[in-house]
Image 1: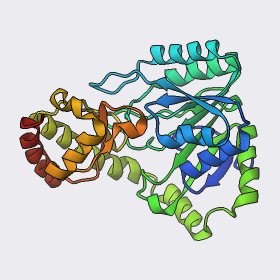
Image 2: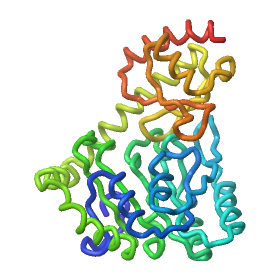
Image 3: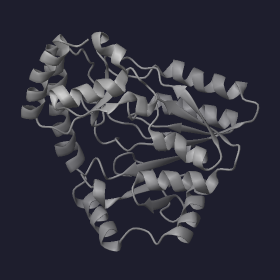
Length: 318
């Protein structure tokens, strides 16, 4: 309510979860039947597809088209791909998963995208599952929208959130799922059978954080990642690795330099460890062998050290 001005019934439209991943998986488990079809973004954060596969459903990847200079999604094209894919299926698509800022690509959307997606969901009769794990980490004035800001979104949508990234509480496992009463209710019922919820002191600490220190995400966490993003993009471009400037999340999704593209993302990542002392996530883990995901977890001094070594490595890349 404070951030998005959305009214929720805490008894029927919200469930506390042990991180967003746990909440997402168990919600899929609670509502999915064998043979259901779900559309997921591609490249894909693994659990977004595997949660459906494990529970007998069929995930179909939908390529996320975005500008690699500023990582903005081509919203009309993406919505068109979703609708076209729905229309060619022999059985109805039951779920469409969206994840913006997108992991791994960091791609972003506007509120207008969600307005059109909600309208499409009502027309084509599917549910939307939105994962906004990186919502609070945004740069250059960009504000991550919530699908629940759209009037009537709760009729067709739920949204998962976590404190792991925004408030540096990754090991605490604190999150929640909010929105549609049927989906939230199914998750709540399943969780009542399989766990007893979060350790109470952790819940109280999380509530205290959101009530008293909610400003930290915008005033401290985001600026820290933004400084690292600015430094890394500049330093790596100067070293010969030309990458764009993402507007959100704690990552940079970087296309492998052309002279190294023949390696593929796995070997390229291995070479970066050996010769640059830099660890990245190979894009093949997300279904894209032409990119790697760089986490903005090092300070500027370490980024510069990596950039100096990177320049030498790229000069000899073959």
